[in-house]
Amino acid sequence: MTDQPPTQPPAPPAPPGSDYPPGGAAAPGPGRAPGGPYPPAAGPKTSGLAVASLVLGISGLCTCGVTSLVGLVLGIVALRRIGESAGTLTGKGVGIAGIIWSCASLLIGLALIVGSVAFFFFAERRVVEMGREFRHYEVQQALETTASALELYRMDAGHYPTEAEGGLEALVRRPPGVPEDAWNGPYLGEIPVDRWGSPLVYEPPDPTGRDLAAVAYHLWSLGPDGVPDTPDDIERQ
Image (tube, rainbow, N blue to C red; front, side):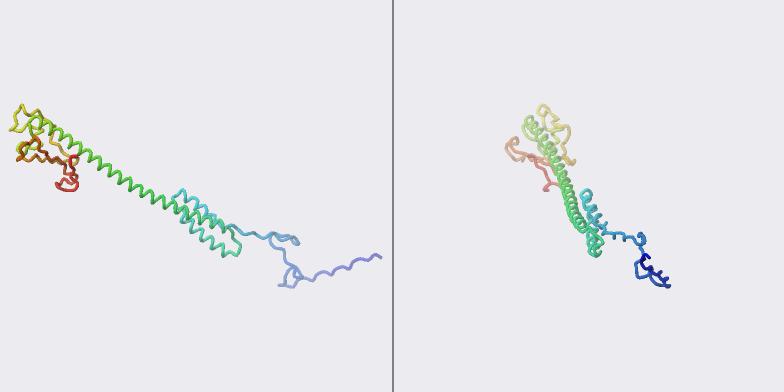
């Protein structure tokens, strides 16, 4: 007679409320067949905030630092959450890189903004100065044209126009006291004015001088304010 191994008695049914299966064996978990191996545990995830911080920090170079401030905040929050995650979140290096890129692009953006504002004010000031220089040049041209006309008048009449002869008006119309053969005008088409519409100021030579042809006259513009004896008066150079 052949020996056979003794048979195991059938397991008693589990009483209500007891664990299954009998003997304390673990019940098959989700996704695992009875008696099969357990699925591998899920690994730590990379922090999405850290990735967003890096992306926003780099894009700040194209937005003059507009997105950099958000990237800096997200990077700080990501590092805090990674530290509190007990290893379930990774990406600390990504978060640090995001903070560095955000700070760098923010500083570069601020520098570009400050530089642009400074350039704008410099350019605006330069344009104003160029306009002032151009107006000053126009006034000098008017003064030179008037001075040339005064010299022609002196060559014909023998002296510069006096107050009795009307000053600069003698360059446009013959004064009554000047003979016709001594006046070959008009020397100017109209009484000269400066860039701001004010007539040029002419101060004739001192009539008490012995030789009016040799005494210098005074010719100038009242400048932008149109008021005499102020710092913006423009003298003939």
